[in-house]
Length: 443
Image 1 (cartoon, one colour):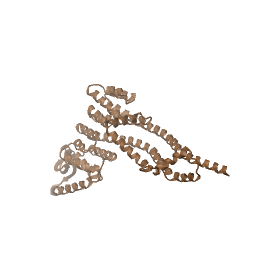
Image 2 (cartoon, one colour):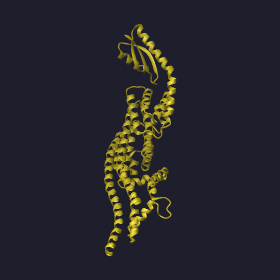
Image 3 (tube, helix red, strand yellow):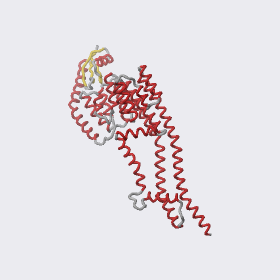
Image 4 (cartoon, rainbow, N blue to C red):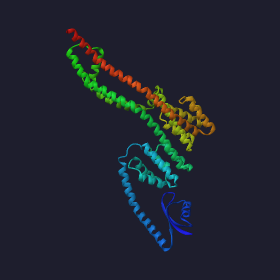
């Protein structure tokens, strides 16, 4: 049997040291882990030289403890410097990467505090690094990880904190974090598909408006001068075009601002107005209800919302979150007032001892297949499995809905732009034809 000197971290992540007797270094590591420590260095001690080596390590460790307050002070100063430029919520990509890395470290058996310290040190300057600095301090002071996360809603929302709390209670934090990372990746992928589909029509509309505004501002006034020189009676369409051009250029009598500034500012004003209106209870309900009634767009929004709320609820239930709490969290994160009201009815139904599927069927916000699958999941005890299957199925249907929307938008854009350009060309050429006829008659 040989004596092994070791340095390790305890369950709180604090360094400790000692010695064990074992037949090999592997046996020594097993004994150290059996004591609840995570070994970072194991050295066999042989005679006087080995004991000297151990004392040198201990001395080095005492020296490190003396330097620790200074290092902590520097770290705090560094945290203050980082805190100033960090605004807004943490990006979903950064948060997903952090969640997956924390899951990996927990699965490897590293103490929680040490895992957080490692991830905080390697994090690039930004909002998450500032948050992790405070989370590390809270956990080191004895707070649970979920409570420490809950203090920073811009980084960790209610869904995230509740799942982490369930993982802590069940002792499966690494598994829960892995599921949470998968959930965030799929949710981000769904949003990215929808945003990507909207880029093409948005860019086309912006460019078309810019071109038409430029024609009104620069080209039409030149034709107006030509028509004025020939003193001919202009058609009604041409008069309307000239008046529109004068409005865009700000040349109409009594006009306060040029029309081009109104065209530029109107999207921002409209967006801000809708945002303010949506903050009111009535406004949010009205906008969400109207959006669901728009052809094609409403179908896309419905399928997206169903995919989101079933995946959220399925993830929470599989993580061990109580069903009433899971429904509450899902209701607050589904993003549509109509579905929120339906989920509130589900919550009330479950609280009274009734089923999940019945109030959802009565609300008529989901297709029959969704309600039936949830009903089967309740009966078999596999509600989380059924919810995840619904989410996966609706993710695919969202792709089909996006393609349908693009197939409808593209020809509509062509027709609208063709009508506008054709109207401008017709309004300009009708007086020219009349001028040519007048010149021919005079000859």
